[in-house]
Every structure is written in C-alpha cells, then in structure tokens.
Amino acid sequence: MSLKTFPDLATARERWPEVVEAIVPETIRSQRWFKGREAGEMKIADFDHAFLPWPAHEELAALEIIEVTTEGGKEAYFLPLLLMPELPGIPVLARLEVGGREYVLAEAALSRRFNAALFTALERGETLAGRNGGCFAFHPLAHHAVRTVKILAAESTNTVLHLGRDTVCKLIRAVRPGPSRAVTLGKVLGGLPIFPALHGHLSYEREEDRFDLALWQDFLPNRGNLWDYFVKGLSSLLEAAVSPGQTVDPGELLALWLADRRSELGRLAHLTAVLHAALAGLENPAAARKVDPRPIAERTLAYLTRIAAAGFPAQPPDLWHRASELAHHLAERLAGPTATGRAIETHGDLHLGQILMTDDGYVVLDLEGEPLAEGKTEVFYTTPLRDLAGLLRSFSYAGMAALLALRTAGPLTPTADATARFLAERFATRAGEILTQKYLVEIARLAPELIPAETTVIMDLLDLCRLERAAYELLYELTHRPAWAEIPAAGIRAILAARTNAGSPI
Image (cartoon, rainbow, N blue to C red; front, top):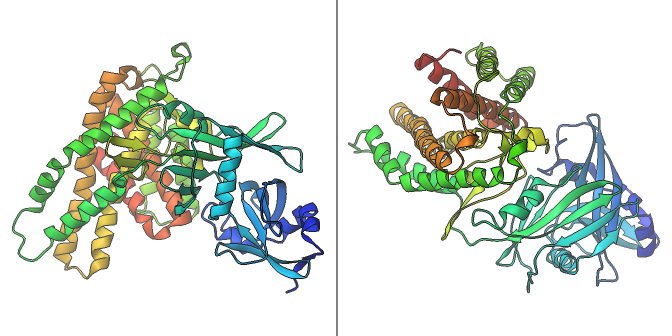
C-alpha cells in the first residue's frame, strides 16, 4: 500500500486535514474511548486543530479534534498527535512519506515531551488559534510547577495520566458541547478535602460553544481504591472459607470479616453524604425542586428494551417483563404528592473504584458520570440515592470479582463453589445494608431535605435507582465485557426476589 506523500514538513502542516485522513480506522476502533467499535465503515476527518509550540524542527505536535462518521452518525474526539520521523514507542495511527522519509503519525497522550509542552502552555495561559475558526484555550487556576514529567500510569474511557509525583492530567476523549462536569464541579469541590484540587483545564471554544478537552489536578498519595481493597479482602475470605479443615460456619466468617470493616463502610457513608451536601450547597434553595422518579423509570425501561433487542437471554424468560413492570409500578407509587426528597446534581457514576483511600481519609474521583449517559445533565440532576445505588451495585461486582478470581485459581468442588458464591452474594447484601443505614444517618444530619422522610419511600426510590443501575450495567457489559453480563443480570433478579420475599408489590 502506497504512503500518503508530502514534499516537506511545511506542506504537511499546511495540508494537515489530509494527514488526519490517513489515520487507519482500525487504530481508532480499537480504543476503549471510541464508542463506535461495532460500526462498519468509518470516515475520519479533521474537525479542527492547532499546533503546539514545539522545539523539534523535524516534528509537528498537534491538538487535534477528529470527526468520525459511521452509519450511526458523527462523533468528535480529542486526539493529541505527533508527526515525526522515528517510532516513539507509542501507538502509531498512520505512516506517511514526508520529504522522502517515512514518518509516523502517533497518539501523543503517552509522550513525556508532549505532556511537558501541554503543562507549559497551561502555565502560560496560552490560546492557540484553530485552523477552522475555533481556538484551544488553556485556563490555569493555580500556579503549580512540574519540574519533570514521567508517565506513571494510563487508563481510559477517558485517558488519565499521572505526571511525575503530584499531578494528574485527564484527557476528555469524547468531545461534547458545554463545559465538562469534572471542570465546573471540580472548581468548587476542589477546595474541599473530599476532592483533588484543580490546577487548570484546556477547552476548545468556537463562537458560543465550549468543549472541555483536558484538566489537571492534584495526584493524591494513596493506599489504592476501595474496589481493590474489598476485592482483595474478599478473595482472601473466600479462599479461607473453602480451605480444607475450615470448621467455622461461612456466615459467621463473613460476619466477623464485616465487623472488622465497619469503620471503612462508615467512612464511605460519611464521604458520600458530605459530597451530596456540598453539591446541594451549590444551588439556590429557591430553585430547588423535588425528585421526579419518572425519568429514572423511563431510562430503566429504555435500557431493558435495548437489552431484549440485543438478544441477551432472560433467565427466567419473563425477567425483562417483570423488571419493566417493577420500574413502572415504582414510578407510579412515587409520583404525585409523595415527598421524594430534593433533586441535586449528583456524582452520576459512583462506585468503589472512584474512592481513593488516603492517609487523611477518603477522596472521590471522576465527576463525568456514566459513559452511556453521554453528559446529559438531566441524568445527573436527580435523587442522591442514585449515587448510593451505584455503590450498592459495586458491592455486587466486588463479590463476584472475588468469586471469579477464586474459580480461576483452581478447580472447586461443587460444595466449595456453592459456599463461595453464598459468601459473595451475602457480602453484597450485608455490606449494602450497613452502608445504607450509615448513609441515611449521615445525610439526615447534614442535609435531611435531600431524602424522603418516610422509610418506605426511601426504599422504593432506592430500589428504582438500583434497578436502573443494574439495567445500565447490563447494557454496558453487553457492549464492552460480555463475559461479565451475568453479574448485573443476577442483580436484577436479586432486586425482584428481595421485593417478593418482603411482600412488596412488583
């Protein structure tokens, strides 16, 4: 296959849209942040770009927004790029010929030099003109010098980079109109001990529109996140419970294990309540409105419809029908004059992996919300119990992750497997009950107006949120991790079974 050819680097700079069009579609399709992985034909084009000041004369460094067109429509993504004559050890998107030499167009997010240049532009508060009418504006919020840049880690669906020892850069890959929640909320919450301080952000601005592309904030020394903490601890518990010669009743083992972790659950409850009280404090009380359960039910029904259409088998066969009936029933019960609490801007995707354990307490991360919500504000402006539901569902995932790890380590007898599964499921139930009790105490102390006054209304609203979250998770897993789809499916069954056992109407 012949390479796209440019007589020199200046021409490649001038004809940059042609450089972008040379990107091999499969290199984009393979990225976790790209939503259209299942799409057929793809067309990649330059939406807008600006070149970073760059010391290497044989290279170009670009802030690039690509526009990807598929049969599903058009999506824009932030894609930092380097055009250079040598392979830099970072992902190559295209190969070209420039001035008779082979060049590579590479993803620049993991480049130390590129990140150093970004931070320099942030410190200077630079604004770089785009070629298609917009501008890339760096907004410093506080002076924070980075002496050296060393990439310590990276992850996605957005890309998070640890720079040196004390700074995190987050690249917001999917470009959407309007400011990022992580920036707008981070400016306020960054002054509290529950959220990392924000150093600044990069936005693309054109006419009246603004698209946030990146942010920089404190990297907090930590002992890991709560997901790893619970999964590791549960794995040890399950291994001990099924080991030969174990004489202690499994339920008693779990009770003792949870008793040793009540303080962690208490800290998590306190952090969640403080977060919600802080978010509620951002709003004018005169503009406050009550929680409307109908959008939650409508999203649940939409998720279940898409799950059924995807052909995921319902076990039992009427599972999706019964789950839909429950969502509809709960919305009807909670509608009307029922006091459902006050709607606030919530975290939107709260789970154990979003909570860091530091020496000074727990810190919450990532305010972007659920990936499938696509930044829709109305999804996040709702009851704070929706965040609590995310944590409860995360306990289910942690239990099943520990169980899968045990099964992977070696074959289990049917009895041992049943014991381990019992403990994983029982952990999710008991940890969820403890967290819910402690959270309700904390939020009643800090901001009682946010939740319903009646316990039955609280539990109905919480069950509706748990059902929505489980349906969302199932749809997400079918797209991204089909092997994990049974975990949220089991969660839906558990919610229905719990209400049946409690004599609650479905």
